[in-house]
Length: 115
Length: 116
Image (cartoon, rainbow over all chains, first blue to last red; front, side, top):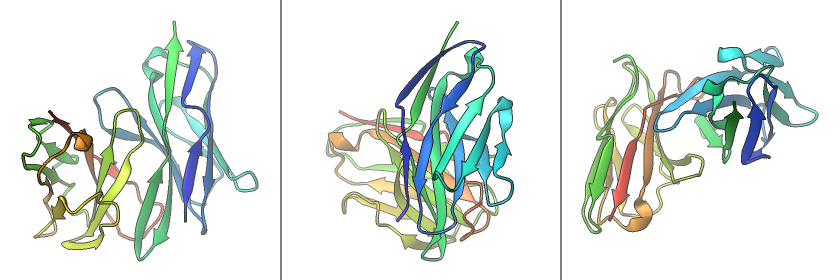
């Protein structure tokens, strides 16, 4: 069985400072991992994904994440926060199960950016 | 279409009323997922279709919930005799190739259901 733990429900940073959103996963197989962002009243947008190629993955809007198998982690980072980054972020684990793609979401981290 | 389209975007239902939520996936996408997202929570899996076949309905919370995708494209999630605890955002998502963990799953903007 797979699961995802997002270690912080809320993170607050000042504009221009680094962002770190933490995610740990559990999976029986070689998973794929995703980060999605959800702005208020909007759908989920893919930021980036890891699919067993390079362990450091670059996404949109300056975000990146590093897959660390030994730590079962997939933390999301950005060097400098922008006001428009304020949103909810979901870490997602995906593996093949029963012949299809089984996807499990974390509980989300709400990012607040202070001017 | 260009993305996953859901309708209605917002629905207010009286307790006991039946509702139907529609999802138009991206054209050609084989896989279709439904998720339920309660306020302040992450999306929870409801059901999965591969073309017209419903391969997994383990997440449907009760027998009041029913989903179909009769021609392998548009899907409808039906909730009978709605209860207040059904209030949530219902997200539809689709992906192109089934069974591949690295597939990107594309989400619609959701149908916001409020039961009063």
